[in-house]
Length: 170
Image 1 (tube, helix red, strand yellow):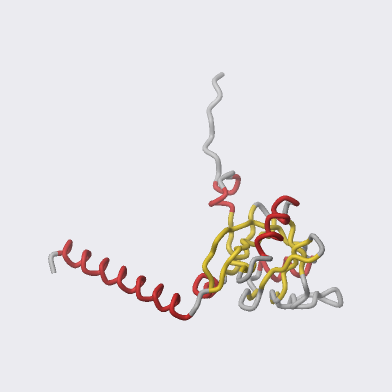
Image 2 (spheres, one colour):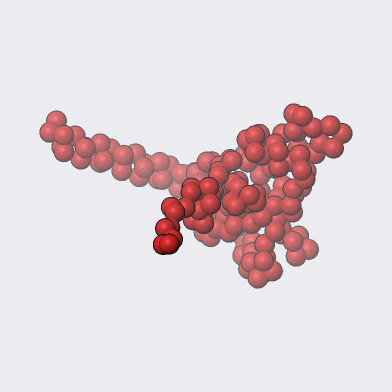
């Protein structure tokens, strides 16, 4: 009797792009900052925070990370209280610990001491059942840099529009 291979289902896939479920993104971060390096960190959460995250009740707008006493802490992240929680509900803007390797923390300590560098969360997602944060080492942009970036983006969009029209024969 010969064995036949069955096609793997999508739920049991080991590819990271298929297992990642993005909960929130910080779209303004890439506009306000120049991203130098990106790290993936786990977050120490309470039970009701996880349930609220799965429902999508989170805001990354004012969030930032800081290195203090050899640990990385996420501040300003707003996770709404869980609707069906009881007295065990969490505080919405509490400080949360980020889980990184010691070598990554040491690297971040050196780089954040440089002037103008900060740690900004780019996105919050579930990967393989665990909540992760995409953390960026970034440098703030000046107003003229933001204007240049907008002008480049508009020029690129206009060029693509013209090429598309020529292909269609307009």
